[in-house]
Length: 263
Ligand code: MF3
Ligand code: CO
Ligand code: CO
Image 1 (tube, rainbow, N blue to C red):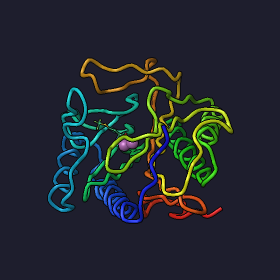
Image 2: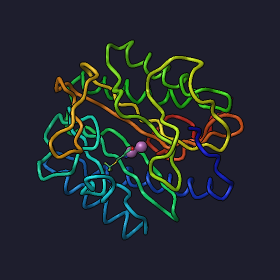
Image 3: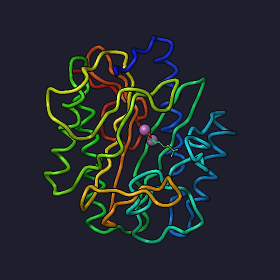
């Protein structure tokens, strides 16, 4: 199924929602410290999204069973969909915070890795390579490119560092719905899959494991962990396909990549 093309009005709403989602990740950074619980991070984000931004946190009550919190916090070997809890973060932990806000009916979805205290060399390297994989994928985006081109570039980068790509979860079209067509997988073959057109919005959100690619879901029916308990990292942006390339709708100030890439 092909992704729908957004109108100019919809695109403007996606820009607003994207910026707000990015702002949440910028706001929460100083709070990600040794001793804080992921529940406290959830509460700070929830209050900011609801009271300051006047937005809806999309994860809250999403899906079946309803997701119980307003953000996802995925610590160490948790791949994605970690549920905020009362366990304190400790020195060396890595945590992905995934924020999705709804503003004026449109979604902005983005995630970032944070580290607590001094991370191991492996942790730092996995996080860096995963962010590079996201950026390499983003740079493939332009009208006429195909989804397989993006997936292939991301997979090549991760595997060239002896890491593995999670296959059970993927990026997605986004707009008035949290998850729309198309599915944007982070592996694949060049010159395959759907062809991109200007006006499409979707996320790229590679999950990269230090060990094998296999995952399992915990009994809470949400938390996804690596089967071999190896470390996992993820970064996510919401993107717009433009006439000449791509616009990163969820770009933050701490990033070294242009918001608009023209080819
Ligand atoms: N934000 C996730 C994504 O990138 C989805 C989280 S679903 C939730 O697609 F229910 F866990 F919040
Ligand atoms: Co997403
Ligand atoms: Co997300």
